[in-house]
Amino acid sequence: MAEFPPVPLTLEGAFVLHQMFRFDWKAWRGVPLPERKRIAMEANKIFQELEHETQHRVPGQSALYSLLGHKGDLMLIHFRNSVSALNQVELNFAQSEFHSFLEVSYSYLSVVELGLYESSMKTYTALHADGLEPHTPAWNAAINDVLQRQSDAMASRLHPSIPSAKYLCFYPMDRRRGEQVNWYTVPMAERQRMMHDHGMIGRRYGDRVRQIISGSIGLDDWEWGVDLFADDPVVFKQLIYEMRFDEASALYAAFGPFYVGVRLPADKLEDWLTGKFTEQD
Image 1 (cartoon, rainbow, N blue to C red):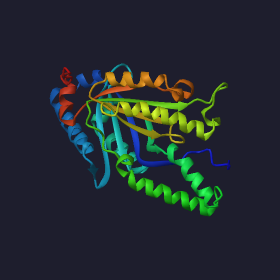
Image 2 (image 1 turned 90 degrees about the horizontal axis):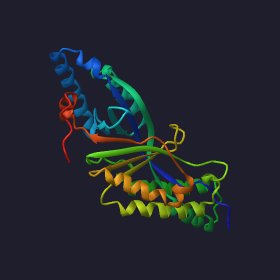
Image 3 (image 1 turned 30 degrees about the vertical axis):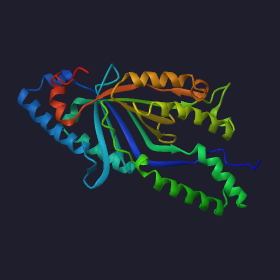
């Protein structure tokens, strides 16, 4: 068999930034009520703008979540077409008075990624059959043509809208590179098989949970970020628990911290600030 590149082809789309904050409730309660109302109204306007598909003619969308537990109080997720656009969102928000009551507890930078394990071997085999050698100009041009056609076909998945689901579960993850097992030394065909089986589990939950995978190798401390959106948070447990038994996860996956939040529409921010936001399911 020909010696093909070990790296599967990937498609990249929107850049993603997660921002987790702690809110200084003590400082907030020390502000006179009229000032709190003014600051809350200013923040409401900012978040209303961030929720829209387009802000200042730059494609993108953001969403705010009320976090559960000790890891933070609020989480913002932003989808933009460039890292510089994400940085501008950060800078704009930092100028607000509301931001002075926030302390960043965590953040994560990544880019929406679609792995092409299924088609990579087919593409490599076809190019080899045409007499092309890996990494030659002709090979690279053919690969770029394949990726462009795939990107056009999957544009909606590469630049997704943030689902309107009530709950979000976010976590970063790695592929293990330990002494006994190392994902990156496994032959491509074996990785392809495992990822196929892994993906089949996710498809069974497709009617209950929306999943967005983003790659972060070279961008942040972990290798991928996973966002799960659902109207029933129990599905997060069910899906991730079942995947624990999958070979790709059981042997090769390492998981970072999990963050679970409740969607917080901008017009509900004032309720949140008075402790009246949460509704019974």
